[in-house]
Image 1 (cartoon, rainbow, N blue to C red):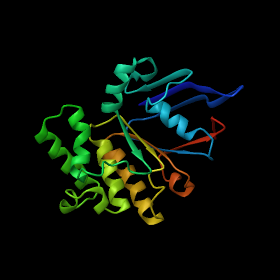
Image 2 (image 1 turned 120 degrees about the vertical axis):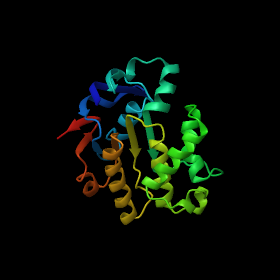
Image 3 (image 1 turned 45 degrees about the vertical axis):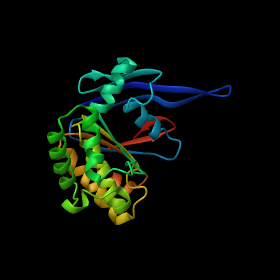
Image 4 (image 1 turned 180 degrees about the vertical axis):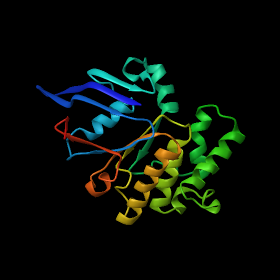
Length: 222
């Protein structure tokens, strides 16, 4: 369960105090797929950064799997991000000189998972996201955009995280491929019992999620 209570994030812009997250309270059950929507500047990216422990809130709490992320010390946050959070980005962020398989194995290497286990899980995940065996040994440049995003999703799942945060994961894809990626994430939230939050501008796609989180000026709106 992801539980957010009274989350506030403010920062200074010159002499002005900007409230990027304004008293946000929400809960997303394990294995649920939620979409975060809102216009540019509504606070979507700020919320994602806070949930992913990439930034600290001014006040409030974020509890993931029973752990209050906001109370963790910096050195514990690094381990937490590596094991409990998976990130999927619009630009894929794959390492270009590694194969698809090696990209997915990398987070498990940092987590000190034995090599044979890393390789087995990476192949399983890449097959689960729809990559063919011969594509697993290709470097990102030899894969299409949709295939690269599938590799990025497999990588995000590598360490069996409690939460996956996807920031406009279909933004660089054509509409048909984007829909397939969205459907894949939805399916994986069930299969892997992982809570997945996706930032998207596409309201048609967002409407098919289990839940929709709509932001306006840093506040939740109905």
